[in-house]
Length: 473
Image (cartoon, rainbow, N blue to C red; front, side):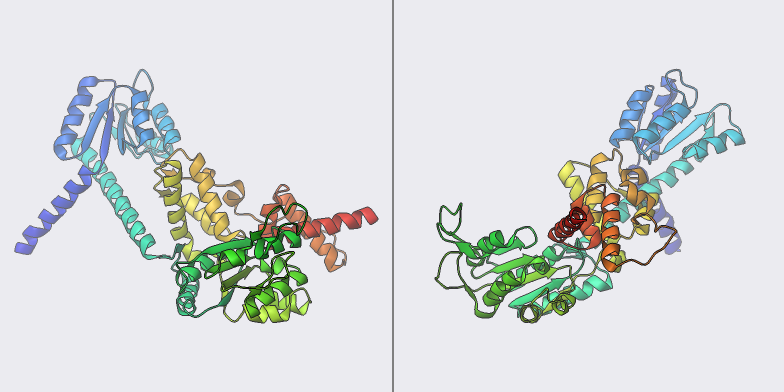
C-alpha cells in the first residue's frame, strides 16, 4: 500500500516540475479573457503571461521567453494563422496552440499542416488545454534533460582538447597515452582536416616536456630558402633582407617540441637537413659555419602516403624510417561517423560562446543532412559548417537551410563523366579531375586542396605545370 501511495506523489511532483519549466503566453484581443486564462494557468503551476498585441507576442517567441503560445484565431490586428506563420519565421520550433469559435475537422487538419501544435474549439475545455500543455511541458523537460546529458557526455568524451568516443578515435587515444612518455620523434598521418595538429598538441601535453615550448611550422607554406631560415635561423647578411641574426624554431623550442606539418611537401634537399637534426641533434644557421646542439622532440605530419613517396623517389627513405619509429594514423571523419553528433555539440557550444548565441541543437532534417554527407574536409569542414550556420541562424535550433548548400544536397561530387569515353593518360585524368574539383569549389584553391587531400603548395605546383604545358602547346 505505501508503494501505491508513493507513485501518485512521485507523478504529481514530476508534473509540477515540468509545468514550472514551461512559459506560456496567452494572446487574445479580449483582455479580460487573457487575464482569466493566465490566472488559471498560474494556479495550475505554469509560468504564464498574456498580451493582446501580436507584435509583443512575436518578440517573446523570438527571444525564447515564450515556450508555448495560446492564440485566438479571430483578432483585428493579426489573425491566428498570420501569427502562426510569423512565429514560425522568427522561431522554427515555435509551439502555437490555436483556438477558434468556428471549429471543424478540416480546419483542424489545415492548422496542423501549417505548423500549429494543436487546434482547440472555443470555449476552451480546460482539461483538454491542460493535457496539451502537459505534453509540451514533458517534451520541454525531456529536451532539457537530454541537453544536460549531452553536456556531460561531451565532457566525458574530451581527451586533451580532442572530442570523440568512437572505436577508431579511442584506439588513437590509447596509443597516445602509451607512447607519449617515450617518443623522441613521431609521425602523424591522415587526411587533411582530420586534426593532426590537435593530436600533436596532445602528444606534447602528455610527454615529459609538456611544460616546455611547442612550436609549429607548416612546411607547405614556405619555399625552401624561407623554410630553412624559419627552422634553422640565420646570421646577419646571410641573404638579402637579413639585417640581424635570428635563431630558428629548433633553437627556440630547445627542450620542447617542434611540429612539422605537411612534411611530405618538403624537397629532398630540405629533407637531408631535417635528417641531420633528428639524427645528430645539430643545426646550422643559414650563413654560419657554427654547429649548434639542440634537444627537441620532433613530431611530423602528412596527408601523403610516405611509403609510396619513398618508392617514387620523392621522399628520403632514411628520414622516413627515423620519423616513423612511432607512427600514429589519425582517422578521417568518415571513419568515425559516430563522433559527428558529439562534435556538432562541441562546435555549437563554442559558437554560442564566440557569437553570443543560445543555440540548443539541430532540427531533425539538419541532423539527417549531416549524417548523409561524406565530409571530404573532415573535422575542419564540420567545424566551418557549424560555425557559419551559427552566425546566420536566427532561431534556437540550426535548420537545414542554415547549412551550406552542398551539405543540404548531400553532394560533394564533381560533374559526372562524359558519356563518350576515350583512353587517356593518367596525367590527363589528373588534370581533368583537379579542374573539376576547382570548378566545384568555384576557384577556391584552399578548399580544392582539402578535397583532393594534398597540400596547397602541391596544388600550386600542379597548376603551374599544367599552365606551362598549355603555353608550350
